[in-house]
Amino acid sequence: MCQDCDFRSGLFAHGLLIETGVEGLYGRSGEFEDVVNRFDALITSFGGGDNPEVVRFPPGMNRALFEKSGYLKSFPNLAGTIHAFNGNDRDHAALLDKLAAGEDWTLGQEATDVVLAPAACYPLYPTVAKRGPLPDNGRLYDLQSYCFRREPSREMTRMQMFRMREYVRIGTPEQVTEFRQLWLDRGRELISRLGVPFDVDVANDPFFGRAGRMLANNQRDQKLKFELLIPVESVEKPTACLSFNYHQDHFGGLWGIQTSTGEVAHTACVGFGMERVALALFKHHGFDTKEWPAPVRKALWG
Image 1 (cartoon, rainbow, N blue to C red):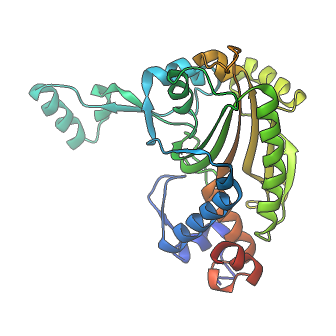
Image 2 (image 1 turned 90 degrees about the vertical axis):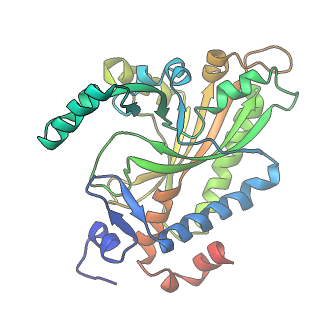
């Protein structure tokens, strides 16, 4: 292990992550991916027995649905849109001239009907709404996707493109609050097997602006969001690696999702930051997975 390297430079020096010239955008080595995949399998060992419906959306989502979701009201600074060239030969020539001159060639780009998904669950809710009222026991989904949030940072745990694994429960208030409590307990047990220090605390989303501060306070007061925190960048500012969220009837009302009795459905989710947990493991157990403690290797590799 490179004893003189800090964590960030150590990840690059050992080839676990690969610099691209953009903060928060990294390549992953085979060893890093193996850890992510092993953790993914560990999650499934805890939740797969509940027989969730497995859905895998691409990292892009329908722009119209994204606009309806309300994400821009709360997190406009984090959103990522996809723009593309839509001009003629003359426009193309002008683009090439600007490119050759080192000028901004992106001014002629136009927004497409695709945006980058900010969370794995965002494309799910309109999909569920199309299926009509829920069955009596509601629905349970297993999701994973690459997600995007525009917050460039030198902190390795704050990537702009990252993977999120989620279990999403949709049903009555009783069904979804029971689900969240179940995963609060499971989350503690799961991370305990990885041999890293952690704590669970009330949290809030990073809502934007003055109105956002009120939303954040309300979220904390009602204890709608908990996070499992692991010290990675520092002990003073631990990283949220799992989140446990109760959305109440927000998404059910927004998309018109109904229970079997015609009431507005409630939703809750547990989200796993895949790269964040992998980084926590490298931080606390070292850059060589072969040297990790035997109980941790057993939990991941069997």
